[in-house]
Structures are given as C-alpha cells and as structure tokens.
Image (cartoon, rainbow, N blue to C red; front, side, top):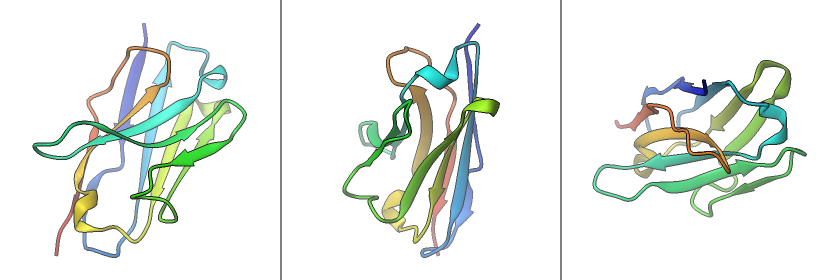
Amino acid sequence: QVQVVESGGGLVQPGGSLRLSCTVSGINFRIYQMDWYRQAPGKQRELVAVITSGGSTNYADSVKGRFTISRDNARNRLYLQMNSLKLEDTAVYYCKADSLKYWGRGTQVTVSS
C-alpha cells in the first residue's frame, strides 16, 4: 500500500524559511522522479519543483532561487527548503511520485505578517 505523508508546514512571516518533508512508503522510491506541488485558495494546483531519480532539479519561475528540492533515497524522503517566503507562497503543499496517482493530504504553509 502506497502512503504519502507531508509535514513541516506552518505559519511564517514574509522573508522567513520553512523546510517541508515528505515520506513515501510502498514504492521503490529511488527510481521515481519526485515532485512538489502547491494549491492556493481558489487556484489550480501547480507544479513547484521536481527532482529526477538522478538528482537533477527544476523549478517553477516563481520559486527559482528561493526554493531547493532534495531527496534522501535511503529514508524514502523528499524535502523542500523554502527561503525568502512571500505572501503568495501561501498554499497547501503536496509531494508526489511523478508517474503515480497517489497524493498525500498535504501540509499547509501560511505566509503572513
């Protein structure tokens, strides 16, 4: 059974930082490209960052230079380091194995002064 569990969200002031984590069980984690998505209130879910099985990364223009995606294959974990947070980064953040259908419940990130 595949389980996806995101954590690490919270309330942070503009300019602050958060580190999100995602633990995936039930798959051979190391062979999958892993993605971080987010969904803000009233908006469609958008792709934020990806990391391939080989460790190559790519980012949405809106987060480039501020967010860093990484993975720990030994622990089946995916991370998203978020720096210089902006009000518009407020959203529920989800991780996902790129070619699979499984979603977690997400973790809420709220950027507010």
